[in-house]
Image: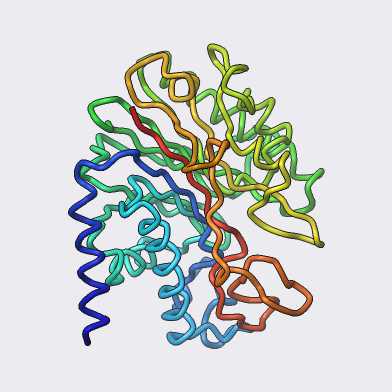
Amino acid sequence: MKRIFLTGLFASLIAVACFAQKPYKVVFYNFENLFDTIHDPGVLDEEFTPEGPKKWNSAKYTRKIGNLERVLFDIAAEDKDYPVVIGVSEIENRSVMEDVIAQPKLAPGNYRIVHYDSPDARGVDVAFYYRPDVFKLEGSAAIPFKMPELPNFRTRDFVTMWGTIDSEPFFFVSHWPSRLGGKEASAPKRLAAAKQVKHIVDSVTAANPATKVVVMGDLNDDATDDSIVEGLRAKGKIKEVGKGDMFNPFIGLLKAGYGTLAYRDEWNLFDNIIVSENLATGSTGSLKIQPAGNSKFYGGIFRRPYMIQKEGQYKGYPLRTFVGNDFQGGFSDHFPVYIYIAK
């Protein structure tokens, strides 16, 4: 009982500290197939039901929710401050998002949700959590992915939200199409997505040059791939960022050998948080991106020993929920990423 009380007290102290503490942390985390246990007609989610091949049931779901709570709380505890914005992917619906932030260690963060059901065939969505005491939401929208060559292609929308942090205008956008069909075959979709997102970014900053834009997500491409470098005009060094460019701190991390997911014994860095020129250079307003803790990098990858597979074929990989249909009881096949912003 005493341990439970102390845990709750620590969470409450973090919540109190949040109101004035800086720098602010912005996080993205791929939740890896966070489905409920109920089949939705018209959605290809049978795999994640009690009758499906994964035998997805309430006990496994509850463990998954607890695992996500542990990671997100440890991300908060690192700074004694809940992140201001958390972008998430691979979630089935708003209900599963609510279950995560209702957990005892996360509830004091008082998070709100921006979520839209997407046209994705499996029913997986991207969405945001945000702290209303810091990020003052003014609006949100789901913008459909469009590619004239593939008018019937179904994928997740670009989820956007906008508002202010410390009275400075911010605009957030998340999502990229998957590598279904292979990297090369699917690359045109991600390049098209990048160009559409860049058009959104340019439109927002043309309307108000002071708006600071954050693009985040499991982009299904490495930080140095064409969709990010060419499509978004993302640079890896702040000194190289000019008007109309963006800054991707994860380019430097990838080149230094870091990754967020592993495949065939190679690390990839698909999880990115990319910022507009003014957030990188501080050319407008006071808030700008900051080095991640004591690191020389401006982005960070959150990983702890308990999040890593300890043995077997996938030793050293992120400890995932399933390998095939075998339940591993893990967290995600991706590590979360983050940036800091401050004056």
